[in-house]
Structure formats: structure tokens, C-alpha cells
Image (cartoon, rainbow, N blue to C red):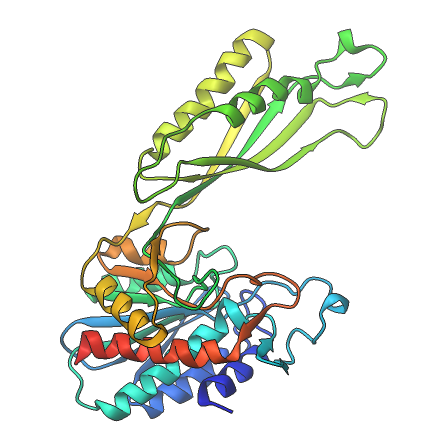
Length: 379
């Protein structure tokens, strides 16, 4: 059994449902301290974070990731217990195997080998690990970045172990992400008896033309690096549960994943203008509560992308695609600090699903890629 696989199994067996770290970071501290890292636990609220560094001058290359995982879903639907870290053929099963305890294991073993070969390497190596990526993300990476800023610590390069690959390990490198904004639109009509609709004002009926307009709206056209902004309704709640009551209120939750071609203020203006136009016609009250999850970011071609692209080509034999697709990541907190940020990890096919798994050979290959990135940037 490889060192990477052994560490991945140890991490998976810790039931670290967000925001509980369940001892994962303590295990990492023991490994990193043995390689000469200064490890500093940073706890904010209920969230455990780890900031670890080796070296004290030169460019700072940080490996970032999260030890928390999402709930398992129905455990009886798993072919292997979700926290048993069992191997079946070429696959390691378990919650967090791909997202992203496998990546963290690959990072640690890559650094261990690199430090052993290059004890006097140039620059600095860092680890930024949180247990608050799958949750609200309020007391995790964002707080660590604020702490580093207060100390005037600048990250130059950051490799995040999010599962970026689609069909083969290393076929996709994430070089940015779209922004994400959530909102709850509340439309207030008038509740009443369903047999006397003239005495009521159905909130769902009032919402229908607004929803239709927002769905059909072209928010922007995107650009060569980002797809167009997308609008999706995630939840719609209304009614009393009775079949003979006209609902007086409807709450519509929606999300926009947006490109740099549109601003947050533009998004808010478009939604609010739509609601106001229909309010003038149909006469109802409304309110919108907004929650910004993150702004879009992109790392342009430079030292980090060149180093990662070269490492992937050398170790896997294929040229990776540079992409900004997918959901948000903690890169949204790191990139604004001025760091070059990319995401490279295993296949994302089973993440957040029942029977999440990762190819055990890919873990060792990923570790070799990370090691080559270190050599490309710090030797």
C-alpha cells in the first residue's frame, strides 16, 4: 500500500461532517511537523483551520484544501460503508475520497518526498486547510486569509485540490470560477378561499410572469474564458398545505452563477426592475434578500499555470484544458489577495454522491504531479 493511499484511508475514516474536522488536521500536523513545518491551528467559531509553513523567504507556494465533507445520504444505498475507506478493485470508496481527502493525502506525500530530496529548497511551502468549505464558509479560508493579510503574509502561488478532472486525471485545470449570488424573492398577495378568487390575490399567480421573465432573460454573453451567466430557481415555497386556500405569499430562492461580464449591482438592478414592472401592473408587495457567495476570479497564464501544465504533461502525457466551469471554491477567497490560483484534483464524477470513490492509482499519480509542480517552482 502506498503512503498516499494509506493517508487517504486514515483521513476518510475520520467522520468529518462539516464543520467537524474530527481530528483530520491533527493527523496532518503530525505528518507536516516531521517534515519541518511550523503548524498553527486557527480556530474561528466552530471551525478548525490549519496554517502550516516551511521556509521563511522567497515565493510562497500554498496547497489549499478542506477536511470537511458533506453528509452521506442514505447509508443503505452505499455498496461500502461511507467511512470505512474500503478498496474494491482499483477504487477507494468513502465520503471525501474525491472531495477532497484524496487530494490532501497526495499533497502531503508530494511535499514529504520533495523536502527529503530538496531540504534546502528555495522559497516557502504552505498548507491552508479548513473544515468549513462544504458549509457556510464563513469561519474557514476567508478568516485565514484575513489573518494572513493582518500579518502582511502574501501567497504567491496556490494549488487547490478540488476534484477538477473530468474523464482522466489532469485533463482539466481550473484557472478561475464564476461568481455566485443567492437571493430569496418574497411576493405577497392575499390569502383567501379558493372558491372566491375575486376576494384573494394568488401569490403564485403573481410570481409566474416574473419567474418566466427572469428565466428567459439574457444576462450577458460571457466571454472567451467564461460561459454566459445562468439563472436557476432552487426552491419555491408557498401555500398552507390545504387544497382550498389561495396562497397569500410565495418565497422563491434562486441563484445566479455569473461571469465577469456582469456586476453584482447589474444583477440586482435587473431583478428588482423586473419585479417593479410587474408590481405596477398586478399590484402586490415584494422584497428581495441577497447573499453574495463569491465574485468571479481568473488566474491568467503565468508562472503557476505554466508549472502545473508542464507537470501534468510530463506525468500523465496529456495536455490539460484550462477551464472556469463548475461551482464555487475557496479560491474565491484566496485570489483577491493577489495570489495566482489554480485547482487540480481527481475525477469529479462521484463527488457528493452515494458511493463516492477515487481511483487509487490516480492518487499516486496526482502526488507525483504535485511534486513536479514543487520542483518547477521552488528548485
